[in-house]
Image (cartoon, rainbow over all chains, first blue to last red; front, side):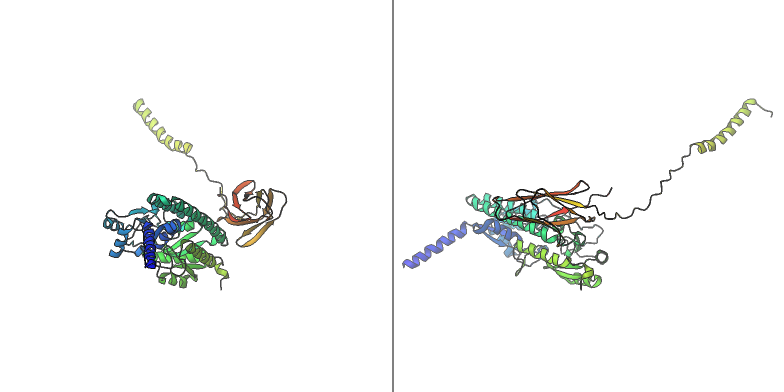
Length: 307
Length: 149
C-alpha cells in the first residue's frame, strides 16, 4: 500500500513537472532543435514537419492544426516559407498559441541567383525573391537564438536564468562552429567556390563564406526550371570547370544527375538545405558540419585532377 | 549693270550671305578629338608584389603557421614582437584566405591570448584582424584584391 501511494505520488509529481514545461511547437525539426538548445528541460518541443520532409511542400493536416491549438508557443520560420498555410493555422487556433516568426528578426537577403529572365513556375509556397533559408547563416541563427530566449523568458520568467545560460552556451558553440567553417572552407581556393545545388537554398551560406551559387531551380523546390535555364546552367558549369555538384536530401536527384552526364561534373554528395536528417544531420550543428565537410571534399580537388 | 542700286545691293548681299554660310561652317566645325590610341587593356596580370604580414601579440606565441589552401606558406618563431613575414604571392581577383594558427607555451600565465594580424602590400592595408584564444588560435584572414582603377 505504501509503495503504491509512493508510486502515485511520483507519477503525480512527474506530471506536474511536465505540465510546468512550456509546450512549444516548431514548424520544422531545425527550429525545434534551436528551441531545445535554448529551452532544455524547461520546455517540451515538437516539430510539426517530420525530419526529411520537404519544407516547401508541406500542407498541414487536421491533426497538425490540433497540435498547433494545444501549443503555448509556435515558432515559424518566416520570410514567406509558411505563407501558403499560415492564415489557416492562425485562424483555426483561435486564441491559442503565441506565433513567433523567427525570420522577422533576420535581415533578409534577396536571392543571389534569382534571375527574372528565368522561366519559373512558382508553386503555392512562392515567397518572392527574398531568400527564406536564413538558417544557412550562423549569424542569422544567433539572432534567432536570442529571439527564442526572449520568447521563453517572457512566457516563463521563473526559468530566466536557465534560458539565459543555455542561450549563451549555445551562442558560444555557434561562434566556434562559425570559426570551424571558416577554417575548413579555406581549403577551397576562392576561384573554385561554386556551389551547384538543386534549389536556391544556400545563398546566405554563400554570402558568408565567399561562394557563388548556381541552383537548378529557384528559392522553392516547387520551382520548375525551364530547359533554357538548364542549358544556361550546363554552359556555366562547363565554363567554370565545376568539379562537383550537390544533391539535396529532400529533392528528386533526376535533373542534377542528368546535368552531371552533360558536364562531366561528379555528384559531390548530399546537402541538407532546410530539413534535418533522420540518421545523420539530426541537429543544426550536425547539419552544418555535414554540409561543409561534403562541400569541401567535393570542391577541393580541381576538375582537371579528378580521376 | 542697270537697275535700282538698292536692288543690286540686295542681290549682292544675298550672294555674300550664301557664300558666308559654308564659310562659317568651315570656320566653326570642330573635328572630333581623336582619342589617343588606347591599347586594349590587358587583363590585370597578377602582380608579385609581396604581402607583408605583421603579427603582434603579448605574450608572443611559440609558433605561428600560415597556410593557403591547405599548404603551409610560412612559419614564424620569434622572440621579438611584432614579427613580420613576407609572402611573395600573387593576389587573384577572388582574393585569398590565409589560415593563421598560433600556439602559446603552457607556461604563460595569461588566461586569454590575443594575436593581431595586419596584412599590407605596398604600404596599403589589405586586412587587420585580431584573434583570441586560450593556448592556441586558428582562424582565417581574407585578403581581397584592391579594386582595379
